[in-house]
Length: 354
Image 1 (cartoon, rainbow, N blue to C red):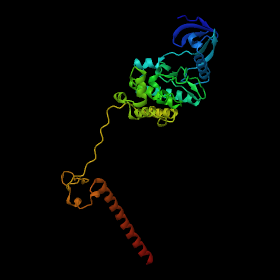
Image 2 (tube, rainbow, N blue to C red; image 1 turned 90 degrees about the horizontal axis):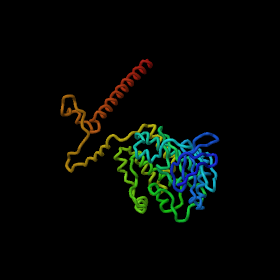
Image 3 (cartoon, rainbow, N blue to C red; image 1 turned 120 degrees about the horizontal axis):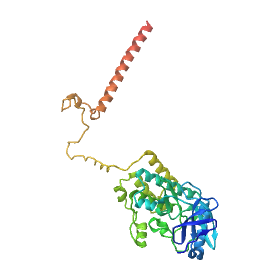
Image 4 (cartoon, rainbow, N blue to C red; image 1 turned 45 degrees about the vertical axis):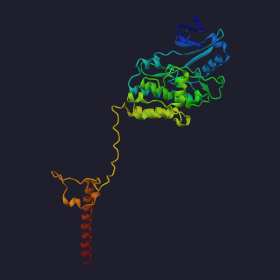
């Protein structure tokens, strides 16, 4: 593969990877800073829709400014090939971090999830649907700060670039409506976010399978198996949140990732931790016996006695407990004070009339 030495004022330093577009580390020779430059290949530039999508990504991303989204500095065309100049990021992809188990403990992973949710909620506020949320499109640095990347198939409100019958996105993270080729809403990103968080917390993909047909069948017809989350002792409220995000019907998912981020923030602030042990099973209700030996609230035992005093048996059952006796004692004290008060008023009235 032949790589350019220079694109405009940008000196190419290193090839970083690519397919339909190639990404390089470069240096801005005017400002003296390192940047990443993404250049559409000749094959991509020859396809009118690919070129239009690339330019749309440049315009869209240049208008998105958020601390958890990669910054776009410049875009243009050089020798017939469109390019985008972006912030150069230190760190690694979230995919690499998950595989190498470098995402930290449960709380740190929830903080990563929170940043992703806030970033996607922001692009939704700009009327943009990402449509390809996955670990490969998220960069994470050594401090745990994330940056979302790659808006290559993102779609702005009113934008029509997809060929009829052609579905875009990475199969494992696609929402059911995306698989069916239906018109997408931000709820598709909510679904993908839920699948991503599943993987972030468990270290396993939410869906398995090597063939696209099998993956699509699972997405459309099979609920997610939450066993890997339970095995990693993920708290029930987080498992429930992932379940709601990945509901088959868009209307059954949370209304947006802003609401999801708020829930995650409460979890982070509350210090919810992984479950240390499975919850004890609920105690089944006692069934009433067929004979007359019905269980009743037990009487308050006297110290050293196994059987209750006879006078306690004469009280109604509801007063035989410690709480019931306290109520009776309180009532007796109240009545005693009332009697003394009444006697005092009678005597005082008698002295006045004399």
